[in-house]
Amino acid sequence: MRKKLLATFIALALMLVGVSGAFAQTLTVGLKGEPTSLDPHFHNVHANNMQAIWLFDKLIRQDSRQKLEPGLAVSWKPVSDTVWEFKLREGVTFHDGTPFTAEDVKFTIERIPNVPNSPSSFASMVSAVTKIEIVDPLTIRFHTDAPAPLLPRNFAAFNIVSKKNAEGASTADFNSGKAAIGTGPYKLVEWKRGDSLTFARNENYWGEKQPWDTVVVKPISNDGTRVAALKAGDVDLIDFVPPADVKHLETDAKLRLVKCPSTRLIYLHLDSNRDETPMVTDNAGNVIKNPMKDVRVRKAISKAINREAIVARIMEGLAVPAAQMVPEGYEGTSTTLKPEAFDPKGAKALLAEAGYPEGFKITIHGPNDRYVNDADITQAVAQMLSKVGIKTEVNTMPKSVYFSRASALEFSLMLMGWATDTGEQSNCIGSLLHTYDEEKGFGASNRGRYSNPEVDKLLEEALVTVDPAKHNALIIKATEIGLNDVGIVPIHYQVNVWGMKKGLNYNGRTDSYTLTREISVVK
Image 1: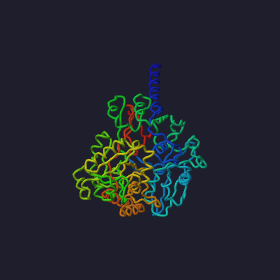
Image 2: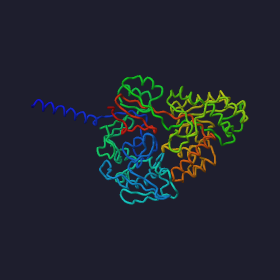
Image 3: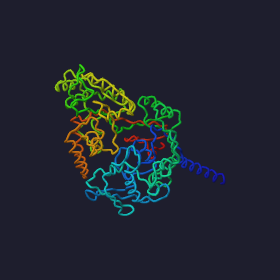
Image 4: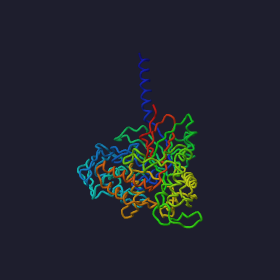
């Protein structure tokens, strides 16, 4: 009898060890980027925003395909054209045990525009708010001067901090951990810049139970080193697997790869504004009138590009030909726009019709260290344009030089990329297609200075239309007009790849984030 009881006890003990083991593990991930700060409002860039989600929470989350879902807010609705009401989640506490209330939300929104020395602020996400009204500890209203249909989308971009811990705190206090007190699934243990970030599970997290006891992040910017670390077993998972390594990693029995389309659009800006553009001449080298002011020339450039070949031969299948600003199926996208078909004969005919039967000379510029295979894509586009008669030279350079020169309007034709944080198109149209208007904040990244009053009018009307169906209809119409007018030339959307040990599962995200809450053990 005693032997039977002992056997039963041992069996129960082993079962308990097994259960405990599943929730008492360390996950080590190798990520391409390292945050510049742990202050969630300091620098609006990918690495910072992703890491912030581990420590903090947003009022509104985005799921893996960037659809909105409840976060610290359980619901939100417009109660008039200029007032949004948010109901907050009950029973949430910060890492130090302080209850989360509407006071923290109000403090956060008032803090965001006032973070000293922010190189890329979140201020535009809260700029519509003119007054904050706390109805009760779990109900808060945001007043705006004009209808603000994108307010929930914008509120999905930033994280909520603790008034108690962040009031009077500096960005350095967040970086030291002193003020990095969130409501998120993990607590900060230690940040060794350039080496590692260590997090411990928040046992009192309001959301789903986290499978990892400890998470260690290793920032590894070099692609080859990151892949080598995965193969050596030094890390359990890596992001941004380079296309050239995908095939051989897929044959490694100890590893598995996950691919996920992203919203990162690779496209061309064309100078369609100036009468003379700096990098265009006739075939004899004489300055000519800017041919890209003619939509037929812009259309010819688009038709000359073989997107399928770029996807297959340069991106090794890890891209999807693009027709608009974000992939079809996202909120406010057109179902009629399709990727321009490769048509060199049609391109030549359009050039002849526009008065350039012998083409012209142009230089295409691009970065060589920003997007996946950016220099190779630039080179390929140049070869394709040359084949239809546009004799194209290539000039690529580091991003540290490239973007400032592009913003100074030094280029005529340039390779660019754009990824929407909001998961819908108005953000892209406002930055890339709307007429440049510094005072209104439109066209900030419109480096081709494309301008179409009809696109501007439709977008501006959409931005004050709260009804979602009417808002989306206006956005779709603006997109179709701008893209049919070839305000930009879409090429492809990047596909992101994660590599991990066998036994782990991660489905990937269109925003390219690696979130520990979505990494699980395969049973």
